[in-house]
Image 1 (cartoon, rainbow, N blue to C red):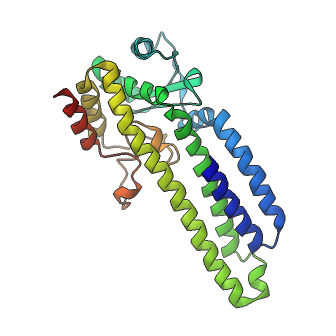
Image 2 (image 1 turned 135 degrees about the vertical axis):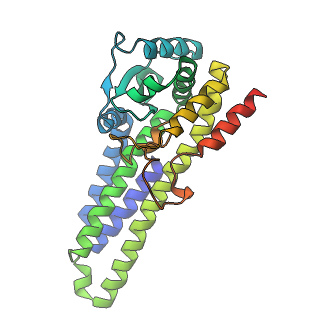
Image 3 (image 1 turned 45 degrees about the vertical axis):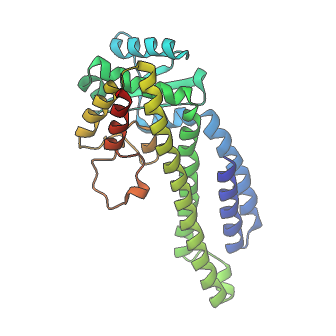
Length: 280
């Protein structure tokens, strides 16, 4: 959060300099502090809203409830709230600011396609994110990275429309400043994205291992990951801002030229290999 505050303050300073308006810098500082607070208190609600998730009743999703309840007891965690996304793509994620305000969300496709031991593996993985205190960090990143993207986009749109005042004062200096601004904005977006992806990859490996230890059956999660990866269509309700939260990349079915550097998840095959290595 401190790093994002610095990034946003830097962007605000440059934009205020470009437009010759010091007030923009102070507004950026105040708004970045507000966004930090919002990412702490309301990131789970924002994530659930973006994902179009709905509360799941115990009667309708009895197996999901009992599996989550039993594993929560085994992990020594409070029972999280349960949400469901109406989507045929099998996937799941956890969100919330701490273990007492945690949410586990699964798609209807996941509940239809997995056997009980496989579902236990997935839920144990998500409970591990809660127990390892990943959920606040990964949920806050949704809000903070999104804000960096918005402020960068606003500045670039204004620049290309000729909204700056300084490049009108001195043509050469204004051109250099505009180029520098584009470079700084792009670098800010790349840095924010790489932070999100690095966090996501590391925490996925740890949650896999912790979840396998919780169920004492790594093969359950390994088989679940195989079934999840076999479904080659993207989720209908997913957003790129929340993709890193899911147990498997929900955008995997979309064709993209982006390199592995910008993939939100470690390779499924590598995760399965590590899980099955735990058995031996």
